[in-house]
Image (cartoon, rainbow, N blue to C red; front, side):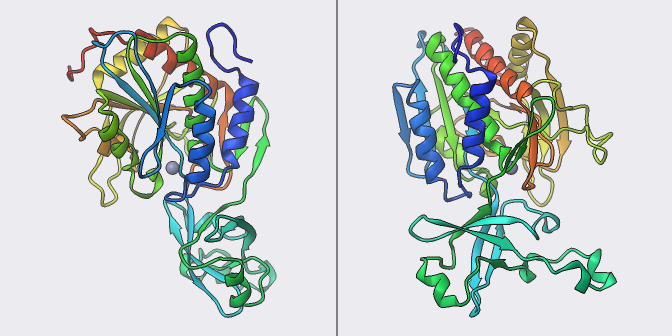
Length: 372
Ligand SMILES: [Zn+2]
């Protein structure tokens, strides 16, 4: 249960995280998540709407109309696949949606969607070890050669279920509790951020801040990173925080990449840049960053820093909206992002919500929006 500050506690956060990690929500097909999140945030907010693209927008009016408004958002969608062809013998071919490596596809359980919104279990087939040649064992198979087996024996049987080209596929939900309050499973990216939005909503409800706050679950981040841009056009926010943790650099394969560790507290991304054909990223707004640092110091919450190339978030495009929107990316550090078994630490998750709630509480009419 929530205590006096309105913040949800770790067990409550874990239960909600488990629910969101299991909610099927491929990029562009987020409606289940949108209605689930809308129902959850309505417990705290007076005004919640779903826009034409599917963004869920919960608005909390501030007590001072002169204070700048803030949008805090997390993306609802996830990576996965879409059906590209149904074979005569009932096997299903697919295209990737979002950044999924060929290396982690085969042998996974998936859920295959139909046009009427039902989902059926399936398997991404993997060739048996003992019939692979020596060359094949070390080779990664391209997606164009992979297939999904739902147990069907014919194309007709697949189509009779309403499963057609264009239907969504996601990894089958997984949730495991690891040692040290750590969680493993599907789609922590960005179930963690969505849970933080509820945590922040409960805090705002208990203690209304001076600034108007829009808590937004966004669509299509994994597809084109522009869902939040549409939400900002609608709410006309003065500034924004994207809740999306950077990858931790504390696994054997990531040593020397950065200083971010699981269990080390919330992490802020000071610089990101996609750089793989997309000339975009975000350099954290100095004013928002200073505000975050101050909130962390005053509340005894550690703050980790990340700066890396290779990725971007909605803030890359969001910052260019209206007459410029100061943006900051921060959140719960994760491991194994964009794999079927991601991992995070519940202690970090809890602190992210506490930190952002404290930041929101400190925004007043004197906050400098200019980039100093
Ligand atoms: Zn992602």
